[in-house]
Amino acid sequence: MNKGVVPELREPYERLVRSVCGKQWRSLSQEELDGAIGVVIVKSILDGVAEDLGEVASHLGVSRDLLYDPFRNLSLNGVFREDRIDKDREALEDADPIAWGYYAGYASGATGTASERC
Image (cartoon, rainbow, N blue to C red; front, side, top):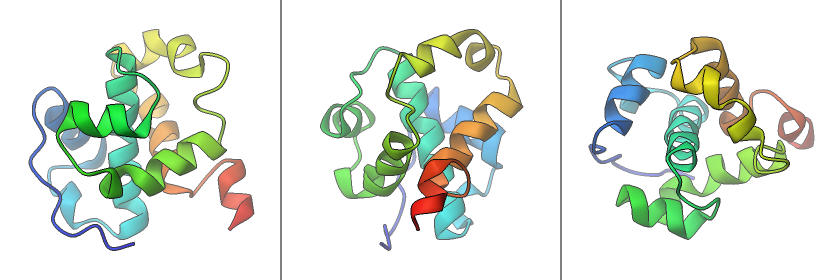
């Protein structure tokens, strides 16, 4: 799905996605862009937003369409089960690039069980 123009995100989300995916993250391929959006989804949930597509979209001020594919990929990869994000809280809050990279990979569909379904 072509998601069109990705809006500027409010802080701390814009800063985080730039640090994980690069300053030009909006010009990434669609798969990589899904990974970047996944980083923002995980950060929202880490900040206390419910693990719900509508809640995250409302919190970020973006459309559900923008979040749909990365959210689905995160779900298919089990990210929303067994408090996985909370279990990784320390690494994510310490801005561990490997931890954030895994979540970007899951959201993009490039890694994890969701990649096996394609």
